Length: 356
Image 1 (spheres, one colour):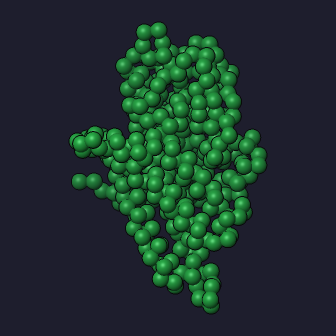
Image 2 (spheres, one colour):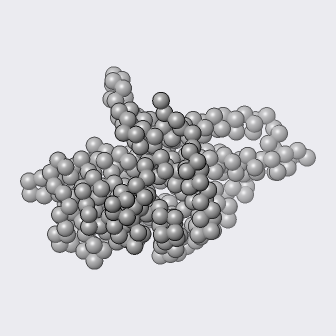
Image 3 (cartoon, helix red, strand yellow):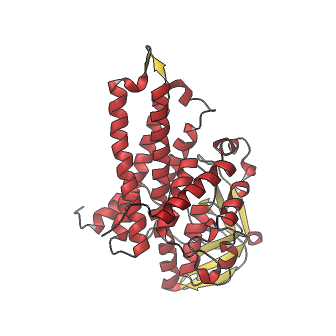
C-alpha cells in the first residue's frame, strides 16, 4: 500500500529548497533571462547543488551522492516548479545522472555529485522512453534542453553495428542557442566533434537511455504540479483582495466555481504526481502506468492553472511585470517535454490493454 503523505525528511527538504530558491532564484532573476539569456543558471544552481547537495541527490553514496530516491527528487521538482527556477536539476541531476548510473559510470558521477559539473542527455526534448532516435555523428541534435550550461554531454549515437552511448566534454561539441518559449530552460542544437568516450553500447545503452527518460517523465509531473499549485494559491490570494463593485471578486459565484474546479484538478495532479514518484522509488510494477498517467494528466493541468491565473488576475496578469507569464511559458514548454500528453495517453492505453 503506497503512502503518498510527505515524510518528515521530505517536509524538511521541501522547506530548505523553498527557502534557498527564494534567496537565489527569485522570479525577478528568471524574468531577466528574457532580456539577457547569457545570464544562465549558474548563479542559482551553485548554492543549491553544493550547499543542499541537490546535484547528488540521486547519486549513490559510494560516488559521493546522497543515495536518495525519486520521492525526494519529486519534492525538489515541486519547489522548482513553484519558483520557475532556471536550474538544471531535471536535465542534469535527474535525467543525465540516471543515464550515467544505469551505464555503470564511475568517472563522471563523483564530479556531478559535488556540483562541480553538470551533464545533459543529448536528445530532442520531446523524446520519451521507447520513442527516440539516436543522433548521427557530426549532425545537429535539436532541440536539447539544458545543454548551454552543461559540462558533460551524454550522447546516444548510431554506431556502425549498434547504439553507442558516448560522453563528450564541452570542448568536444558545438552548440547553437535556439529561440525558446521558456527562457528558464533554454534549448540548443548540439553537434559532436570527435569520438568522445564510450560509456556503453548495444541493448544496454538503449536500456540506460530509456531508464533516464522514464525517470524524467515520472518526475516532470511533480514540477508541473508545483507550477499548478503556485498558480492556484496566488490566484486565490489575489481574488480575496481585488475589489470590484465594492466587493472582493472572490465573493462572486462564478469565480468561486472556477477556482473550486481548479482546486480539485490541482489536488488530483498532486496525487498522481506523488504516485508516479512513489512507484518509481519502490520499483513497483505499476511504475510505467503511473508515469504515463501522470504525464497525460499533469501536463494539461499545469497549463489550465496558469491560464486561469492569467485570466483571473485581469489586466495585471497581462503585464510583463507580473510573473504569471513565466509560469504559463514553463507549463507550455513542459507539456511538450519528454512526450506530449497525447503520446502518453497512447502509451497508457497500451499499458492497460485499452483497444485502439
